[in-house]
Length: 213
Image 1: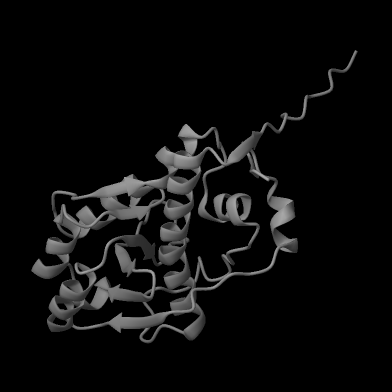
Image 2: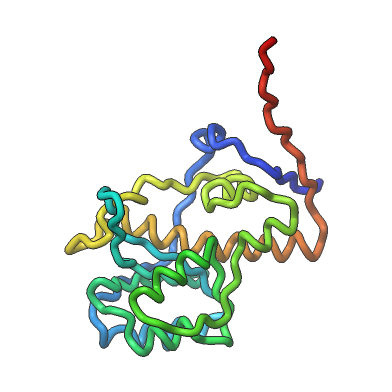
């Protein structure tokens, strides 16, 4: 039976889905000298999932610098605390690398945030929003896309937490790692669906507005 995916996904359905979390090892990188070993390790992998977090600003017109760069393989995730490390030459090496594909969602925003800290030439980045839009999917946030494709919920409870806290909580670390790792799962499934055609796109009609006489 072919997988059914929807062009639009109702957010109200997500709360009823089983929650998914990254189950691999999480490493927090807090000093510049740690970045070389972490980057060397990550660049041995076949694919990486990438995301960023920024401390929310509740003041109009103020935008904080990106606080966290999370980079995951299928089994590990490294959380680079950029507010402590800055973007080191080794992190630039990772971001400019052309050999290992790095997948994410809305990568233009992430790359812009990172370049505000330090200029670099983006390497082999692949935006899942571009890929899934090719299949006809229109709701392309991570939470909706993951629910649509896998029938599981990614919690966003930590999204607006303080990403510049002295110590990240276990919930923050798990949230950040899950977002990066989920991008790999989505990419793998996109490749499978694209190659096999093993899916049906279900069109969800937009509600029509009632016109008053």
